[in-house]
Image (cartoon, rainbow, N blue to C red; front, side, top):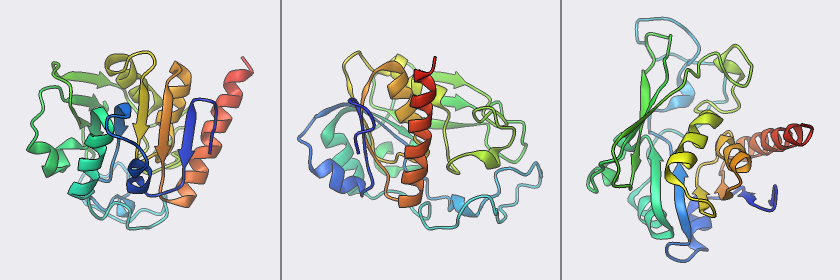
Length: 222
């Protein structure tokens, strides 16, 4: 589906999407694959401090985060893109072998004691490590609860804008293989980048499309 002239999003497997493109077609892939933490079972809203992993009713259950992508996925990702930013890079052994100088650390300023202080992204850039500080909990587009998120692992639009500002150039073609909530599409639209993205889960795909279209519509009002 062409959301705008520059934003194209499909509901399909990422391997099928990448297979259609030649080597180095995309200038930068910014992706957030499953970390293999079985995230759909976690309650990410409670402020309990004992560190337990307990069932949440906020999101639909599913197996989307039961395992990490296989080696074929990373080989294809690196084939079709000149550079990569991979959130959760510390969870993916295939990337460990490549080494990384320029990690990105998202410092969440998280007030919930049993949640992580932040997340790491692998990058293919030979740059110094960078930190992005942004308190996301209770700051989801004006909502006061993480339960209002469009996707359980939703990342802020501002985080993707940070990545684009610091690692992309004007005219770059961007790839996202795990659209999730659609935050990257909103960031790319805000900054004028071309984006090709896909989401396998139909429900999350449809929710993301609605969110992206609403955001674009609201922008045009001002």
